[in-house]
Image 1 (cartoon, helix red, strand yellow):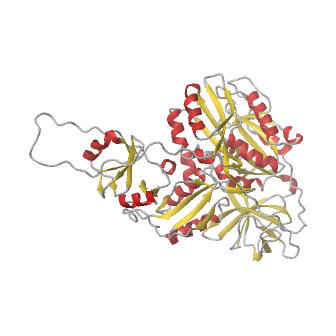
Image 2: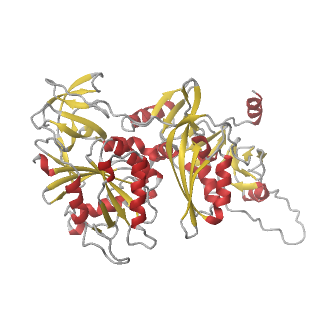
Image 3: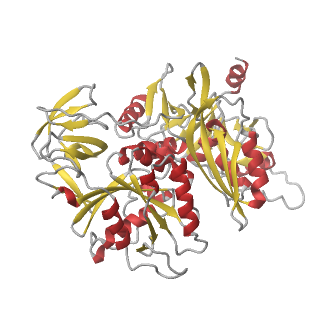
Length: 608
């Protein structure tokens, strides 16, 4: 395959702007899928959690052929918490397609990935998607994209970007605006042709010493660890001797390539050789890692290791020590949890793990709550059982001053909820940066707020906006510490005994607050069974049963009325707890508990 026939692009977009649907259409219209393979289900989001949540978590590769050109497409996550994935993906491409919703316009998560792409000197192609939906305003969106690029320090060349209008779900694109409600173009050819015209071809020399940087890892039970990366120069072949180098100054190891594969559609196809510009998969090297350069042993040409933004949140992962431990999980020991975290580190480059002084407790640092809770969700599905603490922000000392991470928050809400949301963000030390009504009853608020203030805010936000608000946040920078921020307003109801919940006990507790448990659920001493209606913690008898005597009061006995319990999810639990509490996570259950289960231990700890 000659060099001119390869293009490498990344598709970037905010969560739910239609990126994965667009990639599906590109695969179908390029003839990658046969007619009978046209499935409605999205092809790219193939991870179970991605399908459930409708978001992209892992950067993935596929390839299409259009008019004799091989186009490698990297599907990147739209969420800043998966920034480690984004940075690796952008190192493999020569151009980016920025997908923006024709109604919502550029959002904070778009800003994050775009900033990275512009800093790398990649030229963007703006695709205004969903132009056929009511409320679409393509002109306003293109102007907003220009302003965003300008703010992010784009060069004049980057600001002169091509614009494509599209409807991903209906499978058409156009370079010209058409009439509302009509189809503006026949198919996706306008987008394909724009990519061929504006994304530069690879200029590497096939005869130069090999230079291939590994940007992603995969694993196969047949061939072991697989490295994915783009060849900058040189040619790679199976059974070739190479040098694996960790940057210009790092250690180097000799190895031999087993197979070389390239992407074709969603499949991986073995090839006899691959040259500059091709994104390849290689196996046969046991200790291959992210960021290493595969190079020629005779003339090594290592590239600098990939840089990834530092984590901003930390949580403690602990062995589950509750009385119900070991009933549901397969992996419960500290060694098993440690081994699983080490395995995660091999491909999750934005994660940091270290042991603490306490036995069975590990400190895990990540890019945000979602980054860490997705890891926990994956672990519980694999059969792990553990307990986790409240997330804490990672402070840094800069020029002798204690600094904390600041987030940019965009909240899209109805005007009637504006007062409550602004008051709540103000209490959490948020500063209003911009306020923009859309003229149709909604308003967009932009805030700068300490990351600490956002922990536990999403549930409050949903309540304040009656579920109609949209909120997104992104790390901005470190700034001096902003002072204390108030915590949870309500106390909790704590079980005083081990046993099983009875309906009779729930009826007696109904006026004390909202419950997390239902009848027949197992409970133990120190477990949190509900939210107290007041600001103090209350120890309650949740296992109380009715006295079965033959004495009856005249008249009909009252039927027990119970308010339905709050559905306890992993995210809700992690956001809800305070510093002296833990979330107990098992493959089947999520429970909340006090760190110290016995009341006298809690009193002693509060005095210390």
